[in-house]
Amino acid sequence: GATPVPMVIALHGYGDYPSGFDAYFGLSKVTRQAGVMLVLPQGTTNSSGSNFWNATKACCNYYGSTVDDVAYLSGLIEEAQLYFNVDPKRIYLIGFSNGGFMSYRMACERSDLLAGIP
Image (cartoon, rainbow, N blue to C red):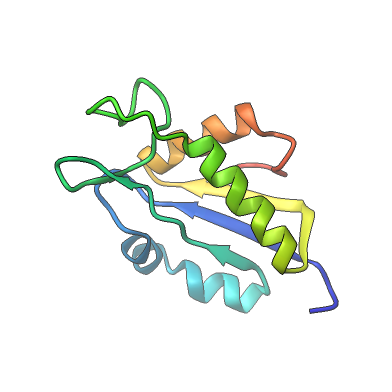
């Protein structure tokens, strides 16, 4: 569209899926009504079959993966800005549990891309 829109990137918890996170919190409905772009990425699947974000030593990289989720999420943000009219001053990350840890890591390491983590 012609008007820049805010973007919310919602990060699921350990072992969850984006669709479950969305359904539980009703994110699609709320963001659609508010005119906000919603991004629901999925973390890496570990060897036990659980999806996770490589957020901090505290949570939840139990198998020593070297996946770089900061780079992954930074790339998602940058790619969304190439293809959609995203307001760069209104990009937010939210997360539950392991996704919350990842939101904080992104806020610390890539504050240049984010307006905040509510």
